[in-house]
Length: 249
Length: 194
Image 1 (tube, rainbow over the protein chains, first blue to last red):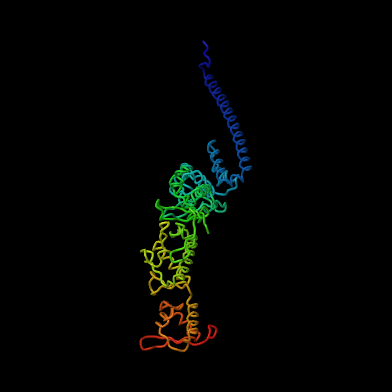
Image 2 (cartoon, rainbow over the protein chains, first blue to last red; image 1 turned 30 degrees about the vertical axis):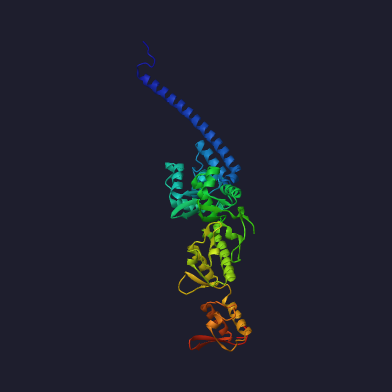
């Protein structure tokens, strides 16, 4: 009887041959898939590049936009900071330089996304913790020194990022020198209240956290000199905004 | 609440900033502090001139019921100047040559120059001239407590000494030893004759 594949020596030959053709077919398929993926990646890369180039100015200028852009990249699994060159794709396309800038971008990202709750002041340890999480294990460890240096390099952008010492604790301040949104809110409240604002007013009227209210008021007072402190107020510390006070003379 | 001026019981017109509660707090912002302190300097020298007060002490802010109470306190808004801030203001007054620590070598009390020592020298010489006391010897007491009240009534001796010292430099006065201490003799002339 004849069995397919036979039993003689030639059976080994045939077996080998079919295995070879299978392997060939498989490698052909893989090749096709890879080249397909390659072309898809290239296409995607081009699209993303185009987007980055078109919106380069916007990305550079607007921290919120940059944050959104980075989130978009993250959600589709592309790390804009990764790339063949040192400084990565981000540096290549957006022209933002080296590793320091990358870290700077992440600092901005964290500062902007936490501004709501901390009023633009974040503790160094907290900032490093969040950035480390953002970068993942492969991003390598970052230190306080790295953050300080990166903030230095952010200076030309004029965003007003600064490391300040608050009672022996390092904090990163990210609110710009001009009147920010919180200050606009405080000014509005001050106008309604004839110039005097306490933390409680901002908490009850605008649902701010106590920390945000305190930081915003302290910023206004210490950094910008926009208001005067009254420490003899029955409720504790009161802030007076001269521009909202009514002067008879 | 409007911030308005207020006339005190001694007839001094307090500026409207005196009714602003934060005026009584030492401001943490250096720029704001400088602005507020400048207002205090003006207010203190103005009030001293109005009441002819020559001394201001840190303790004037510590207890009520002294010559400075209506300035260092505002009962209408329940605020008072903290002694630490007054101490800082005294330092500024001294730095601006509007006061000198008196006695020297402490920082709790100053003698105020609501007229500069140079101005006092002219007032003194003018008084001596107009009351016909040039060339005669006067005791310090004759000047600080004359029978007829003068602009120099109550002037503190250290300030009088400064004024006489300035006149001495232009040869318009001379300190003379007299039996019970020191006296002074004034000579005709003006500040341009050296």
